[in-house]
Image (cartoon, rainbow, N blue to C red; front, side, top):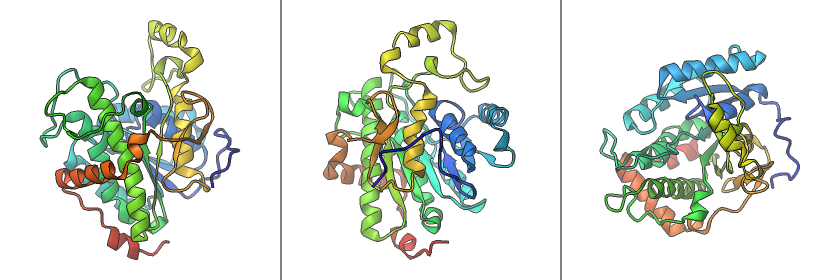
Length: 319
């Protein structure tokens, strides 16, 4: 069982461990990387924009003296399945993989439905399907280290528990529904992954974490990473009692990724729902429905053309 006492500012020593974080150039992804590096880990920062990724890496080096030699960058666009496969191959051959934080995503979807070059609805592809494919591609490297997957959940699944019977929203698209459905899918897939990994005897655990209500205007200003305007600072600070910085929003994600007492299938979030110290939380009912999860899993397998190699992973000997 995960301990109740956990200090997000005094993390365990992660020397010798290597983690990949999607969407690392800003927000939760950047701060997760910074916290991991401060604890001694090596990180693979990923993003789709090389200039923004370089700026985030430079910021991390400025802020963390120990970062030199422990930060890699990798181009990865989770909305593009070709990019997912290429990035996974590169990450797997350049070192061990002890954990993957599936963080990247669209938080402000387009008003009108858009599709990727693969013909997939953009929000679902970016937030859920690309991460499903990436996790499957990295399963064997993770099995070698007894590693961990962490999927990014959201409070929105409690507010609007949409059942993604049409994951691509061919009909009835709205920006809000696209976002919530993608988060229902992401969380459900995270729990379903753990069920299937356990059933197959694979030494990889899968967890889900959510950041509460974390906003940029309450987040430290960092050149190239987070530079909110004065107006945004003012507006976001008006919400102070129910919000927190993205730096603190990364706490549950990092705990789920590295807490040695955390268990597969657990869900982490802030202590006071929208803000606070990270702890084990209770996910929304819809994300715990195994029938919905199984349906989504089969849809993702068909759409991404990715079959997780459970049998091979079960035979991998941990190093």
